[in-house]
Image (cartoon, rainbow, N blue to C red; front, side, top):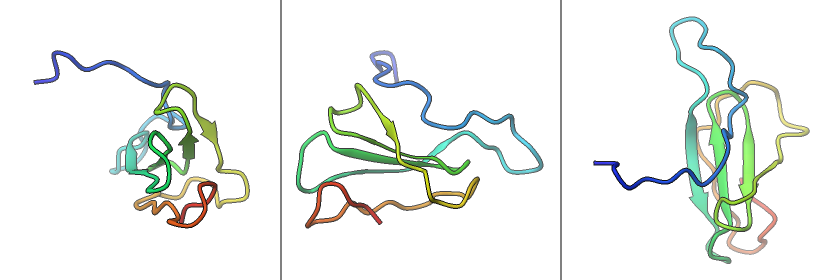
Length: 86
């Protein structure tokens, strides 16, 4: 029922206020690397892609170079390279 949930990270979205008829600022994709326990990738509906190598304690925004504000609906960590996800 969520009584024992603990926050393990800061807000990973850009935290824009909702606009129009689609809510923003939600994690929409989450995947763990098959190569390393605790290597997680997160994508949001407001365009962020973040990665953690320590099971969520610290996160790095790796959105640079991607189109801004696009909905990230799927993340697939590479089975060959820990530093790559599709």
